[in-house]
Length: 79
Image (cartoon, rainbow, N blue to C red; front, side, top):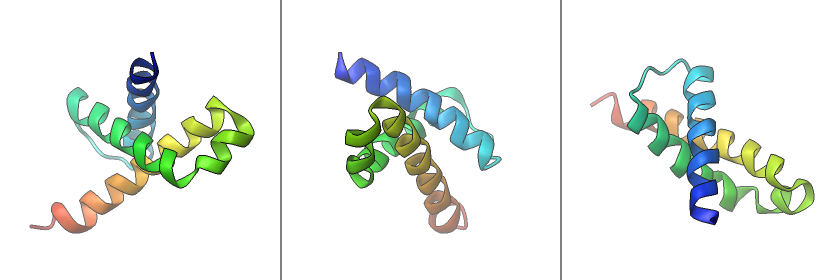
Protein backbone atom coordinates (compact mmCIF):
# COMPACT_ATOMS: atom_id res chain seq x y z
CA UNK A 1 0.00 0.00 0.00
CA UNK A 2 2.75 2.59 0.75
CA UNK A 3 4.23 2.06 -2.73
CA UNK A 4 0.84 2.65 -4.39
CA UNK A 5 0.36 5.77 -2.28
CA UNK A 6 3.84 6.98 -3.27
CA UNK A 7 2.98 6.52 -6.96
CA UNK A 8 -0.33 8.37 -6.63
CA UNK A 9 1.07 11.27 -4.60
CA UNK A 10 4.22 11.39 -6.72
CA UNK A 11 2.22 11.54 -9.95
CA UNK A 12 0.06 14.37 -8.65
CA UNK A 13 3.11 16.22 -7.33
CA UNK A 14 4.94 15.75 -10.64
CA UNK A 15 1.96 17.11 -12.54
CA UNK A 16 1.74 20.18 -10.33
CA UNK A 17 5.51 20.74 -10.33
CA UNK A 18 5.82 20.48 -14.13
CA UNK A 19 2.99 22.99 -14.53
CA UNK A 20 4.46 25.40 -11.96
CA UNK A 21 7.89 25.17 -13.61
CA UNK A 22 6.36 25.38 -17.13
CA UNK A 23 7.98 22.12 -18.29
CA UNK A 24 6.27 20.12 -21.02
CA UNK A 25 6.84 16.39 -20.49
CA UNK A 26 5.11 13.14 -21.31
CA UNK A 27 3.15 11.16 -18.71
CA UNK A 28 5.97 8.74 -17.81
CA UNK A 29 8.49 11.54 -17.29
CA UNK A 30 5.97 13.51 -15.21
CA UNK A 31 5.38 10.43 -13.05
CA UNK A 32 9.12 9.82 -12.66
CA UNK A 33 9.75 13.46 -11.71
CA UNK A 34 6.96 13.30 -9.17
CA UNK A 35 8.00 9.98 -7.64
CA UNK A 36 11.68 10.91 -7.36
CA UNK A 37 10.64 14.35 -6.14
CA UNK A 38 8.48 12.68 -3.51
CA UNK A 39 11.48 10.67 -2.36
CA UNK A 40 13.69 13.75 -2.22
CA UNK A 41 11.03 15.87 -0.57
CA UNK A 42 10.18 13.09 1.86
CA UNK A 43 13.77 12.83 2.99
CA UNK A 44 14.27 16.58 3.26
CA UNK A 45 10.93 17.38 4.90
CA UNK A 46 10.55 14.36 7.21
CA UNK A 47 9.78 16.62 10.16
CA UNK A 48 7.02 18.38 8.24
CA UNK A 49 5.42 15.02 7.43
CA UNK A 50 5.39 14.04 11.10
CA UNK A 51 3.75 17.31 12.09
CA UNK A 52 1.13 17.61 9.34
CA UNK A 53 0.64 14.09 7.97
CA UNK A 54 0.02 13.38 4.29
CA UNK A 55 -0.42 17.07 3.41
CA UNK A 56 3.16 17.73 4.51
CA UNK A 57 4.28 14.80 2.40
CA UNK A 58 2.46 16.21 -0.60
CA UNK A 59 4.06 19.63 -0.14
CA UNK A 60 7.44 17.94 0.21
CA UNK A 61 6.78 15.92 -2.95
CA UNK A 62 5.94 19.05 -4.96
CA UNK A 63 9.00 20.89 -3.64
CA UNK A 64 11.22 17.88 -4.31
CA UNK A 65 9.89 17.57 -7.86
CA UNK A 66 10.48 21.27 -8.45
CA UNK A 67 14.06 20.85 -7.18
CA UNK A 68 14.55 17.92 -9.54
CA UNK A 69 13.22 19.97 -12.50
CA UNK A 70 15.56 22.83 -11.60
CA UNK A 71 18.54 20.46 -11.43
CA UNK A 72 17.55 18.91 -14.77
CA UNK A 73 17.24 22.31 -16.44
CA UNK A 74 20.50 23.56 -14.93
CA UNK A 75 22.79 20.58 -15.49
CA UNK A 76 21.30 18.14 -18.01
CA UNK A 77 19.33 20.10 -20.59
CA UNK A 78 22.20 22.48 -21.45
CA UNK A 79 24.29 19.66 -22.89
